[in-house]
Length: 87
Image (cartoon, rainbow, N blue to C red; front, side, top):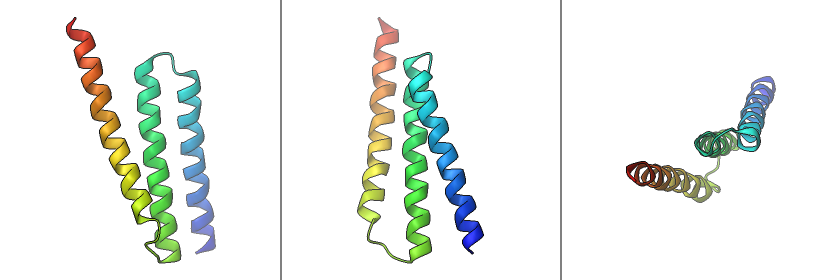
């Protein structure tokens, strides 16, 4: 079980580093926005895995807050880009 936890942690870390790299180096704003969504999704998966491993629900409000942030952020950016393309 420890090996699976370590492998999952390394994969979450690799995903977060890749998303951070794209946020820093992204050539366009849309690349940075998508990378921030990936970073939020990676954090949500890591929190969910931690909850499953330790068998608790203490961080469930944090998980729900991140989910809300991801949805609201994506919708607001999509509306902003759609209104900018209309003009």
